[in-house]
Image: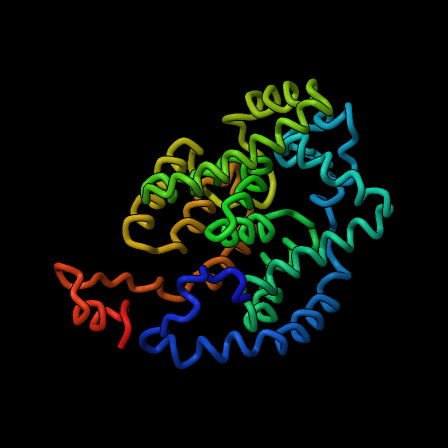
Length: 301
């Protein structure tokens, strides 16, 4: 797990309990896991159909939603902004585009799971996720990074959309600045995209309205109606925000996915990234005395 994703306030806080005995070796073993991930990548990447990443590659301006269908071949269902952001990468050609995307997925897994990434990628849902080139691992990385860099949530809102229920974390905790950054960054990106191709946005909203409530075919989990899952996800985020359990946001995002493909189980890597106990927020004794602050670890000793 990259220490860059650990909030600055938590980096120098001793980790309590059994976690302390293996947390630091986990971080130190990050470089060793790189070799494991790369070896696993070479083993699994040669098989599987890159169905999802091919849809991103074929998403042409003016024709983004011609093949739109849940589970359909080469169906592109994300915002026009996402497709426009990929335009420079398409200049590499299909083969390079596909492999760069897969490497990005592996990089996200590596960042999230650290030394455990080599094991994760050998799990079938994760291997299929990487080979198919979906965005579940990148989505999870954006959510985890979003605790420190809220603008990362724009990736979530401009792709899968509904996992954005995780933004309730900021609202429940009264972190309005972070919420404003997340929504503001999303609005800014969408605004630029709208200027570039205003018609595409109307087509996207129309596509989402048409597909709402439809049942896709394919390798999906039995997940229940999206509306019920959204309610459950919102309640989970509220509970997580009130109890300082960041992993609950990743779990809620999984529940809120528009379609819970089996490959979405790869989001479990985000639970590893957020498994460390949150910083124990201790308060000084009433009156804020020096002694109380010392006992709480918040003042000079």
